Length: 311
Image (cartoon, rainbow, N blue to C red; front, side):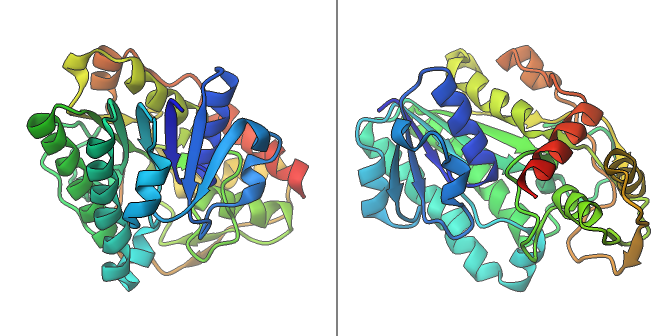
């Protein structure tokens, strides 16, 4: 078994699993199905080995890592808002679970460990675009937990020689993203609302901006790490589309694409949210040979069509 994807039944993880299967790779999934769904692996169940277990459970990690060469550590307790409500619970998964997977990977002789980090580690610093040399300034427990995971990855490279990579994702969206959760990301929440005739709710004034990244581009960034030279290991990389779009503009685009007869409503700003976000992914392009391929508008259209097909 060459590859393990933690959280492989979730949104990003299942898209990564499907891409690896399409490339002819052998894949194992470790997921506790708290947010992941079996239907995300529909059609490839017979080509994937699924271990139902938790990343904080050492025995589950050891079982999942048997014979594995590469780990894509996507599993996490998601949501900035949720981490503000329950920082200790989020920390047990996002720090404790990551350390558990790193240590179990070291014991299993894993060659490459790719960690899913987040643009939230940058905080609300005014400088744009964000680049990896900037001082992080987390505004939420979730962001701090992701930053801690990055440092653990760096240490495991320096202390134990493991090929580690940390990818800072910027507002990932696409097929298989859950719109129903209380902590749903903005794009699936807006698409679901529009397709069902509800007004999308904007938290704040709508002027805040995000660098939205289609999930297929995040998947290709993960896979690029596996084939990257050893000299690229131990580093942090932005993985993003590279453009800024305001939440108000986003709502208008989704309304236009869906043709829905709705209009945005405005609510309170959520704690821990940053005002503006945009990435400079030069380091990933130069050291990993990666760059985004899907435009924001094309990604939105693909996402809307996927949600329509599931309606």
